[in-house]
Length: 169
Image: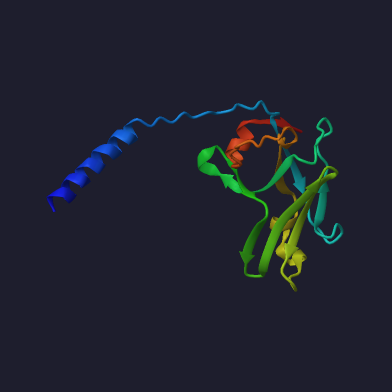
């Protein structure tokens, strides 16, 4: 029994010596990337456009297949913070008394398609203008470094993207 006690102490000392002699070196590779592009559009969804709007990319910007596009819809303003926009990332589903409504988007190098979808049987015109007319959207284009074989570790929150963005009209 005494031997087990000494073996336990010996193993504890050996482990602590081993752990204190380990060093870790953190290597961080800094990749110079193009800045994010952020632009805003006001869109209206009607039966005439089949509740789908095509948004063109800014004229002075060339998008590549590997770039990432993120879309946001303004859902209100934060009065306690100088009326800053409250932005919801798409896709986003809203649940209401009339039924479920989803804003979604897809994109290619040709543009961004923003859609207002509703569950079967829901008349989107009945939603009223608050959900369909003059809706504010922001789009963030995050240039990709995949062509060089490197992936950026980036925070995709709205605040982070807009902080590091070039704002275009």
